[in-house]
Length: 445
Image (cartoon, rainbow, N blue to C red; front, side):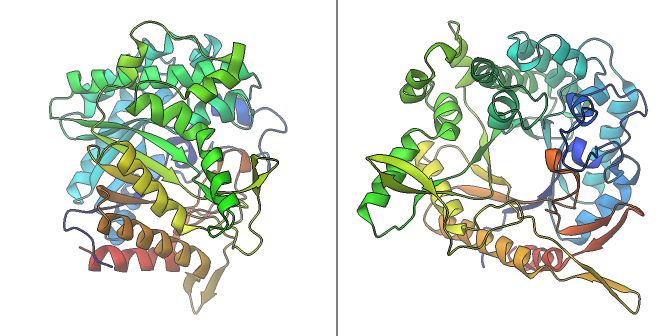
């Protein structure tokens, strides 16, 4: 597979999932610390208190990334590590950690891609209303300005908020993620505030970084596909489902069109978000790129004139019970290329699969033969290449994840890493998928 010479080959992680050290060097509590302490919220009653101990092992992890021939690393900054209360007092030891991480990456020839928010909101801000409080847009902008002043002389690639759908709907209406609320109105208001915060953070980073900064948002998607592409009814079902798709209607539309889906706003009724004059202009200002996260698709049939999601029994499914469908990523890239009129570069910022792995040791040589994950990654990378060949402006691909880690409410019962982690010893072992990524990243450049 051939890619442009300047194509970005990266791996991705997030702070709470790998850093550990939750009580060290002045870090404040996050909503995920609180959520993990609540009985019944995490499937195996675990937490990210230690996770992959990246806070202490970052040097080794940089060497690991370099060994994969990756030329980029997407990481997230833990808001409570640098601002323990979310606002006010700055924790210099937290800033020092990310300073050293960025310097280490650059010394290794790896470009840092910094995500400002990957879900670990400071607990004190949640006590003040969290994402349901409109003031959070300014709190987040102040935090973004702090990080841009600290790292903006070296970091030029910035991502504001990761998957605002998860921040709002999954966390405030479905209740599966922290803070675990179930309120439709709250979820829609949180969605609006995440986008408002995104817009204000873009302004802050551009104003405070000492080097020209490229700033964008990261949205997650599950493309709506027909159960049978040769069946006109199924094709129509997918079209109707797409009209009601919250990933586009609540996030892509406002960011790139300046308005929410009229259909979704009408369906929301009294739960629709409160929008103040000028909000949509802030939300829809120019993004330097769009990061997209994709793992699976939704399949649809038509029943009584309405789209119904159905299971594709002929397909392979991951341990998360997600259908493996590389064609979904291809269609998504082409859709977003058209949606942004080809004027906004695209990055696949997360793509990967969880499968149960087995560490095999032979004569002291440890290996993980993860054929299914390897096939998943190669299939989706090939789908990315086909989209590029058809004209989509895709600048990079980040495999999720660099290593096995704390998988939120699933605890340590899911394995997305291309590197195996023995949590008892913290030993890292390259899986076959990592070897395949290393080879491809080298040959494709």
